[in-house]
Length: 464
Ligand code: PNW
Image (cartoon, rainbow, N blue to C red):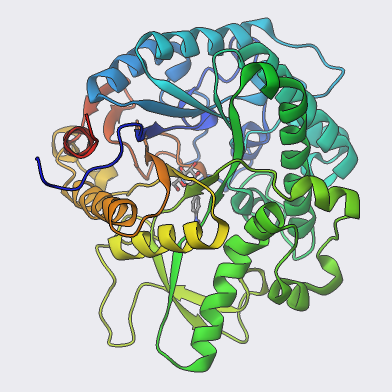
C-alpha cells in the first residue's frame, strides 16, 4: 500500500458499545434499575416488547468480547458505565456498589493488557430510576448536577489512573428530545418545553463534571475529557432561499444548540428566536463554566439529510423536513433498516471539514455504522455476509481518509457502531448494527464480513 495516503500512526480505531445495550444481568451484581429498565416494562414502548434484561449478555461474556476486539486488531474500545451498577440508587449520599466498580476495573485491566485504549462514556442514557423517582431526574437542575458530578468523581477516582479518555454524555439531543419531547425514548415524556430544560441541565452537568475532572483529577491523571454530540450532515433540497435557510436551521437545532454553548459560550440566535423564553438561560458564572468544557469534539454520525423548509412542521427540529430524496427524485444512497439512515460518504467528509473549521477541536468519531435492511429476518449464515454494511464502511472510511489527508481535518479516532448486535432501544432486537452477529438464543458471536473489511482497511491505512 506504499504511496497511498495513510492516517497518522497515533490514529485510534475500534468499536463502540453502551452498557444498557449489551450488558444484560440487569438485576445481577448489585445493579438497580435505570430509566430504561422501567421504560421497557411500559407496554407499547419497545417494538418487540423486549428489554435489556439479557441483551448481548456482556456482563457475563465480557472476556469473550475482549478476545473479539483483539482478533479484530482494534486499537481502542469505547464503552459506557452503568451509573446504577456503580451507585445503584444514584445519589451523592447513596452507597457505592463495589461489585460494579470491580466489574469495570477488571474489564479495563483486560483491555489494557491487550493493548486496547479505553474510551469511557459516563452516561449513555441509562440514568438511575431512583433519581427519576426521587426528584424528576434530568428535569431537576440542582439535584441532578450534584448527583451526576458525584457519580463522575466516583468513576474518576476508581478508574482514572488507567483511563485517559472520558466522555461525559452520549448524544444529549437523543436524551432530551427523544426522552422528553417525542417520548420515543425513556422516560417517555411528551411536550415542547421540558426537553429544552433537560438539554440545558445536561450541558451544565457535563460542564461541572469536566470542571471537577480538570481541577481535582487531571493534574495527577493527565487524561482528556469531552462530550459526544450526534449530528447528520445536511444539504438543501434545492437552491431556493427558504430551503437553504432551512438547512442551516436544521443544523442549529440538532448540533449548534449544544456545540455553540460548549465551544463558544452561547446558544445560536436562530434557536433563541424560535424558542423564546422556553430556552433556559445560563447565568454568567454558568456560561463561563460551559464555554470551553470539552477537550475534543466527540461525534456520532450515521447519515446525511436532504432538508426542506416545513412551515407547519415540527418546531423541535426547527420546522424542517428531513429526507434522503433529492429534488431530481434520486436517493442519496442505500436504504438501511431505519428510515433515517442511508449511506452517503461524501456527507461525512463535509461534516468532518465543517466541524474542524468551525470549532477547531480534535475530532473523535465516537460512533458510525449501518443497520442492514432485513438483517433480523435472515439466518445467521446469511446475516454475516453484510454487504451493505461493508459498503457503507468502505464509503465512510474513504471519506475519513480524504478529510484527514487531503483536507487537513484533525480527526484522531474512529469507532464503528457497534462491536455486537445489541438492544436497539425502542426497536428492541429487531434492528442490528453489529459487525458481529449475536445469536440471541445461544449468545454465540460470529464476525460479519464488515468486521473483516474494517480490520483490513485500518491495517492498510494507518502508518506503521
Ligand atoms: C445512537 N435517530 O442513537 C446511539 O448512540 C446508539 O446507542 C444507537 O444504538 C445508535 O445510534 C443506532 O441507533 C441514535 O432517531 C438513536 O435519529 C436515534 C437516532 C439517531 C441516533
